[in-house]
Amino acid sequence: MLKLIRRILAVLCFVAVTLLFLDFTGTLHHWLGWTAKVQFFPAVLAANFIVIAVLVLLTLVFGRIYCSVICPLGVMQDLISWLHGKFKKNRFTYSKEVKWLRYPVLVVFIALLVAGVGSILTLLEPYGTYGMIATNLFQPIYQWCNNGLAAIAEHYESYAFYSTDVWIKSGIALALSAGMFIIIGFLAWRGGRTYCNTICPVGTLLSFVSRFSLLKVRIDKDKCIKCGLCTRNCKASCINHEDGTVDHSRCVTCGNCLTKCKKDAIYYGRPRKTSVNAATSSPSKIEGVGGSMTPKISKETNTPSKIEGAGGSMNTNENPRESVDKSKRAFLIGAGTAVAAAALAQTKKKVDGGLAAIKEKEVPKRKNPITPPGSWNARHMQQHCTACQLCVAECPNQVLVPSGDLLTLMQPTMTYERGYCRPECIRCSQVCPTGAIKPITFEEKSSIKIGTAVWTQFLCIPVAKKRRDGSPASCGNCANHCPTQAITMIQLDESDEISPMVPSINTAKCIGCGNCEYVCPARPDSAIHVEGLEDHRTI
Image (cartoon, rainbow, N blue to C red; front, side):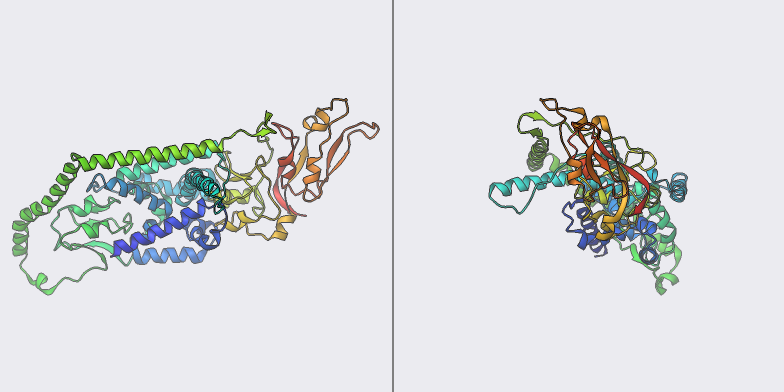
């Protein structure tokens, strides 16, 4: 029952956190936003002492249930390990604690946290790592499936779904996400919770508390026959059945060992009191009985495993298993075809009136990166961001992308090739669980200056191009779309009547929203772009 309850809670938490990253409509945040704020490391960065105290208290009472119930990366490892368990049972062995790796990683993690270097923290902290994987790997698949449903619904004149653009926000982010998923998935497939108990700094930190937890997985040595079933089913590799001990610093209280023991020798709770009869019995008789019964019981306990193994091997040689394999193969082929079709649908060539292909804009080389309104400055963002990319996944304007800079690796930065930061949108500040992007109001958003527009004369269309009659071309897109009216069109040369009209930027009114850069028709380099401010200002 304990194992079943733990699994149900773990699945609910995992699904809730995953949907929070997959949702591109912004509707689920109001219901599921708390699942990101109860994660351990975001609570530390946000100085949410209530959440930290509750998680520490839960660990003191129940052990490391945070790792097996609340942490999405831990539950993901459990799912991968569970899939492997369908093919190979009783595959784990006891291993000693890897102290030479476990504790130095924690020390380095704390040192980087104090120094405010977030690039390496991203690859170690479990919530941020899972967010990176979910945003860059899972969300595109989810969006392709959504677009497929939207196409089907549109065919039947229904608009229950609407399609959305699927695009690679960063090649570096995609490569790192795939690499981390492969590494963690391989460790989980091979050894269960190897990553949690050797690398994860949050798991190591909670291990200091779990040693003193009130309820623990314990072994009754009077009942234990040392069959080893508990050890071979412990995904944390922390049960040594030979001497009847459990390393509670690594135990994640999954409950697998409880359901495998046939003699009720392993239990979860406080230490059992020794019965009077057992205490007064002769040790030699008990040992003799245990010794005489051990070979027989071990054979009996080994027989079912052999029968199960034989059953497994018999199934592999029978036709039903072949039919299952064929059905799986057909399912995978069909799923792959559907995904490929959705991908091709997303890569349609953009054309101008069906005549000429439109060149994609290139990202300008900015002297200072642009950080979202509410982050106040790049230093604050760097110190408080876990790079979970929840803001990137939730951004409806497609202006937030993971940074490729070494010091701010995977943390959000802004670019305006696919949209601009709309003054009426504050979603990134609402979803950030760490306070790296402080919550702001709509009124504050319109007055926060995050950058300044910069005009490049030789790229501007009125300067670079002329009409057939020799007169300068006209544009004015930047001035027409500026929400703060910070751009006006003036003559380049006031003394020349046919001088082209070019933009003039009032830097005092510009807030750096990027609308001018987004609508600029110059390709591939925009004639006007935004340079970020090191410290945001209110105008």
